[in-house]
Length: 302
Image (cartoon, rainbow, N blue to C red):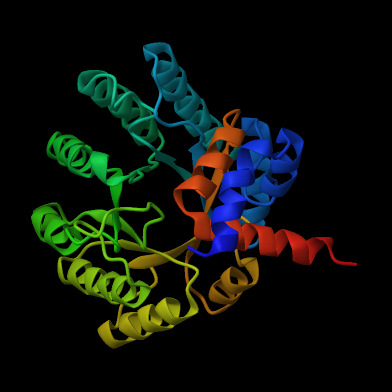
């Protein structure tokens, strides 16, 4: 973290809400489901798939968790009605994980069952390390209960990730592998980016060994190149894996992957909690604050 990044993070609470909204427009598909669907429709026209994420996490009230559950069910209904190529991604703290595990399980099951009605899919997103074990336990719980339209996320920054791959192997899980944005202590997470990159590739290898479908979630040129080489060495088909990227981040690189015949899925967040999402993401990883600030300055230049 540079001095500039720290300064940006400290200044965030003082930044006018309308300015944060302006900066976030590229990365968040509005506040309403209709806006998000317009974005997905455009992505689909470009040959890209999507994952809708209803913004919200760390809810403090049961009613909030139930509201987000229903928002996901509406999103799945709309995806089906409009013929969009999109699934959904949920955060368990949005569904009540830190309020009541039973509530969270019931909410997650309701969303997964709604997706199953349409032959659709739900990804359980991964949050900070305080939720990792509980998230993987709930994933296993539902998979063993017969819910196969369900995937999870593993973060290459965490030292436990290769062990988690082994522990999940019997399920042949559908896994998104990412570096991980959360700032975690050195006791449990790698701090060196090169080591995180290598762990990312080791996780891909291990998952492919289990016959898992993998979402390769990165904007890192080197990692994409190494992942493509791995796919070629193994003779994998395009329905054995996909690449995943964030809305508004390096779209030209995504276009290149699509042109080369690879499946690409774009993570599309939307919702009323856009401000909290924007601030939290920047505070959790100050490097991102620096990147966003630099990107914004470039766009403001004449």
